[in-house]
Image 1 (spheres, rainbow, N blue to C red):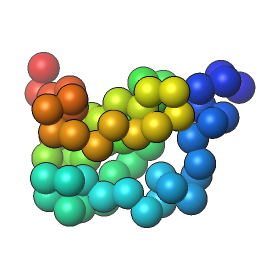
Image 2 (cartoon, rainbow, N blue to C red):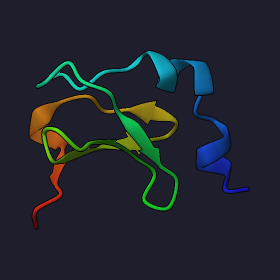
Image 3 (tube, rainbow, N blue to C red):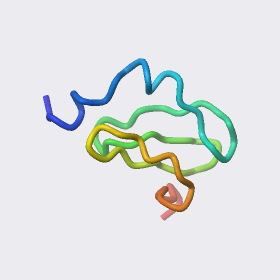
Length: 62
């Protein structure tokens, strides 16, 4: 398993919501991101820490 992925606390991931929509996030293991389908945004996870800033998110429409 990738070292970065193993450092993300699964319980933390369950508690997070999209800061824009307050909706559910899913974990994209391949891209190491938290994805909000409703907002069409993917929030990066860096060094095991989800970066939950809209300004840091990648648009899924690109």
